[in-house]
Length: 137
Image (cartoon, rainbow, N blue to C red; front, side, top):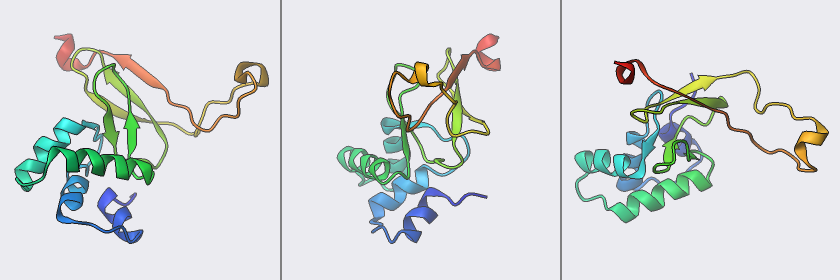
């Protein structure tokens, strides 16, 4: 099993204040794709004195470290995905905005030279869209 965000930060020697620790703890679990406001709400339930600015700056720091992926999936708020490995795509419900990880075997789809338009490809993201079981009813 892949280490949690908190475990990865500790192994890097990252300085974990109480606020950073609570943000990392909130971002633990499968199919975790929270907005910054959702992270804030959950973090405040654990550590009431955590501020909005601290949560936002911590999410940015985690993203800059490559330990959290910042996602723009549904035209709404950015979401934060702590499961950076293994590489995966996403499935988004167009009704409620629920997001699921979708495993795949390649880090990026292969593009032919003509389709790359001279670019070197660093990453690729595929987002599948649909309607979850609850929204179908």
